[in-house]
Structures are given as C-alpha cells and as structure tokens.
Image 1: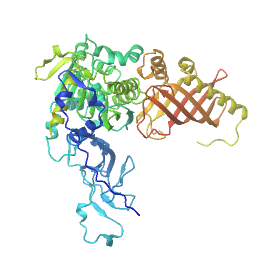
Image 2: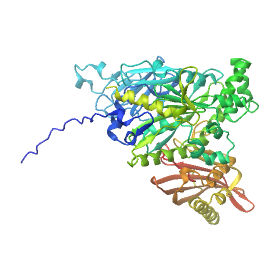
Image 3: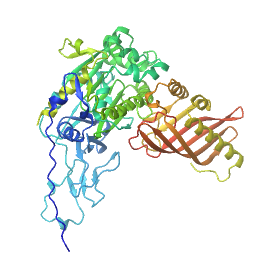
Image 4: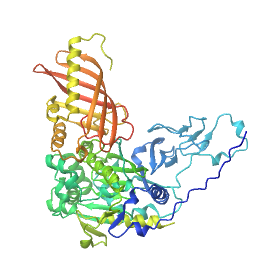
Length: 428
Length: 164
C-alpha cells in the first residue's frame, strides 16, 4: 500500500503588525476589531499577560467553596482552600486534558477528574490516581492542577495574571484603586459582596467595542432615548453637552465617567440612585453611624463610580460587569448587581434596578448590544477604513491631579485606552 | 408540577385558546393588547441559570412587577429601541398545554413554547417551558403570573428585547 506523505506544517507566525499605522491620535483602523490574527496577538499580549479580573472573594466565602471563572479566554476554578487561601486553578486535567470541574459552583475539598479519576485537593495538588502501580517512579508533585502564575486581590476583588512577571496589581490598578475605594466606601461596612449570581449576555462583537462603550458618554442620549423618554431616570442629562460631569483617562487603559460634579450640583443624598434617604432610611442611618454625619452625606451625594478597569472589569454604579472574549467577533458580558455589606434595603433596590436595566432583555443593555453587533458588521466594511475618535480633542485638559479629562460626552477614555493598547501590543 | 388526571375539556379549551391569543399578540408586537391580558398585580418572570431560585435574591433575565411590565411596554411603544428597530420577526408554537390546578377563581397552567426569531443580526430558536397563573376577572382569564423557563438559560444568551 502506498504511504501517504505527511507534510510538516510550519508553525503559523503572525506577520509583524505596524501598530502606529493602525492606531493614530484620533483614529483607529477597522481591522483592529475584525482581524483574527490581531485577536490572537491580543490573547498573548493582553489577556495572557496583564492582570485580568477574575471574581470576588465573597463568591467563595467559606473554606472549600469554589466557583468557575475565567482569565479572559482561559477557564479557571477559583477556590478557597481548607486553610482559607484563595487559589486560581486551571480547569484542565494534567493527565489527558479533560475538564475536571463541570459544576458552576459548589463546596468540595477535592476535585476528581471524571475521565480516569485522578483526584486533586482544592489547592491543586495531586492527591492520587487509581491503579497506582502503573505510575511507578512518577513524580506526583509535577502533576497537580496548574495554578495561575499570579493572583492578587484588592479590597476583595480578585485578579489573576497568566504571566509570572510584570507590574504588581497595585501598579496595574494605579488610579483605579481610588475608584474601588470609593465603591467600598458606599458600604456601611466598607465591603462589597457579590452574591446575586450572574446574567450571561452573548454578543457577536469584538470585546473592545464593549470596553470603549462602557465609558462613552456620547451614546446614551441616542441609544437609550427610548427608556429616558418613558422612565424619569435623570440619567439622560448626565450625558449631555450641558452636563458638568467629566470623562477621565486614569492610565493603564482605565477610564471613568466622573458624575460627581453633577450630583454635587444637585446636592441630593442618594440622588445618584434616583431615590432619597427617606426611602432608604436604614441605609442612611448605617452610613451616618459608619462615617459620621458630614462624610456620610457627602458619600451619599457623590454616589458610586462608573469606571472601566482595563481589560475586563466594569463597575457601573450599581452593577459589576465582566467582559470575556471568546473570538474576534464573539464576547460574553457577565453582569450582576453590586451588593454592599450591611445594606439590605439598598441591596434590594440594586438587584431590582440591575435586573431591569441589564442582561439580554434589559432596558439599557439590549440596546447597547444591538449597537455592538451592528458596529461589528459595520467595521467589516472597508470604506472608510477608519473609526474617528476625535470628539473633544481640542478641549482635552489636565485636572488638578494631572489626569486627562474631557467633557461628559468626549472620547477621552477611548483615546487613552488605545494608547495603552498600543503600548501593550508593541511590547514584544 | 404534575397535571391533574381529570381536566375539564371546556377549561382546557378555554386556557389553550387564551395562550394562543397571548402568543399571537406577542408575535405581532401588539404590545397594548398584550399588556391588557395582565391582572393589576401581574408578575412576569424569566429566570436565569436554571429553573429559578429565589428571584428576590438572585439575578433573573426578567423579573417585572406590574408597573415594570407597563414600563417595558411603554419603552417598546416608543418605537425607538435600537434592539427592536427593525422589530424581530417572530412566530411561536405553543403546545403541551396542561391544567395543573384549578379552582373557581384561578387556574395554574403550563405549556411548552418554541419561538423562531429573525433579526438582521441573525435567526434564533428559543425554547421554553411556560408556567402561568391565570385568574378569572369579570368572566375573562387574565395573567397573574407568567414564568418562562428557557431551556438554555444556563448559557450565555443573545439579546432578546421582544416579548417572550
């Protein structure tokens, strides 16, 4: 029988990309959202290298709790081991690659791979395998579930990095730490909890369209006109050309819509949440007890942040979104209501408002997602080749802390994100 | 839920015709007529992540009180939702209608539904178990509670701004 020659397949090497030709000061090239080769490079240079938000410590509150999470495209198990330490384990059996954990969450001291019953403790160590005489001389210590090379948490927010070296989490978060601090300050006990489960919303669009939209203050007046017209939410005027709110680039890809100037001008405690202290009396009382009268009042006027922490954590006042890339044109947005420790009356309202506004049928997010998907189809067309991001460039300025800011509807956050993106992609 | 062994054929017929009508009003985007099917304390629930835990504690895709049902309809009636511009083209099959429990004023009924949706972004087939509490008001049935358990609600779902 003639043998079929097996041709060696050379490993695909991506052609070098000239990033300065794709990313300008006020424009980016459409292929950045559509080219599978660029997406593959992003996986290596962003998602497998920088810090990525994974989950919150409260999701594994007790020893031996676990929950399925991901570091970008990579599935991981977030566990709290017997000793109380949080671990990020790759959900891949070191034997023949089978997925070890298939339940979304649970409490388990050990995980057993269903394929050949290898058993691991919840810190990843290999505990044993059946019929061990077949593994004489094998070093078990090299055959545990792989751990994410780095794990760090900031005020309960757990991040992982698949690179063993790089900036610390604190360096990566930089100015966004203050946003997380401000969020936690809205809790009478200084802590956020994630306890309400997630909605998972699939969009046929590139992940960066979501990142950019999160702090785009230009679109709400149009994309969300229908809900602003029928619900007296007060959000619409925050994102108008008359708004005193600012858009701010925080560095390292992070950005925010700082709505505090508007809320301070209005001066109504809990006005940021469309309510009053009369309607949430127990929360207001606990905030006064925790922070004192004057500071509690200021915190309740200022509200919680609207901040995009690059590349995948978006804190939107009352919600937490996690952006997960699946393919160049396929992204899943996980979303849940933020919950504040010691604030049951506020938390109930947070859940109700979140369910109304986000997810596949949400009053807001259903319309955002329609824009993501149509923009994806749009940028596949090649004339013009570019997206124009020049809004507000002429009035971009530095605030007293040295951050670049623009008006509420300006594209300062997008321009900053792309500068950071370029620096990551250019780093070999 | 188990269907009672003995069901009045007339009641089953009345409930089935009511569910067909609801389905048609949804398919044809007749939002006001659909809203008029609800009682004043109606509750519209589409759980996420399974058959539904405690909707007061966990995220649901939709968990609408009667006033939020009205808000949903008002938003659709603006005709300005990008996610429904153009409107989804819809046709659904409602089947396996069973009466679970019935007394003089209320009927618990269940059905299966297959909904074919077409949008410019693509076509989607949705499948659900629907559970209803129907209440008789001035001689007519009204929806006091509707729970839509999508078969695939544990997975990431695409946008669904139409009425399910």
